[in-house]
Image 1 (cartoon, rainbow, N blue to C red):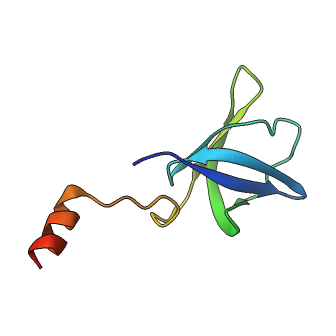
Image 2: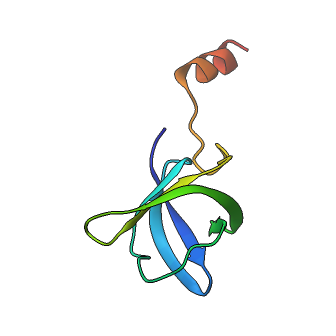
Amino acid sequence: MAWKQVVVQVGKTKLEAMSNGEYLENLPLSDVELGESIKVDGKDIKILSSVLTKDGLINIKLAGASPKIVKEKSEDDANKQAKG
């Protein structure tokens, strides 16, 4: 799945981050306490796990992440639509 730039909000803090729909990576949130969910592009998504990297950044695995966050058409889908 491709990576896409998203807006992440934790409390009053808003950041731009990269997500593939399942992970958020390298967020500079080491001084912010994460709750059970995080707001990604305006949608609350439950956090499965988070890891503090050695650089003081946080990587987050999202639970039940919707493929609509990053939507990508496969070549098979495009071929089916073309053949119609």
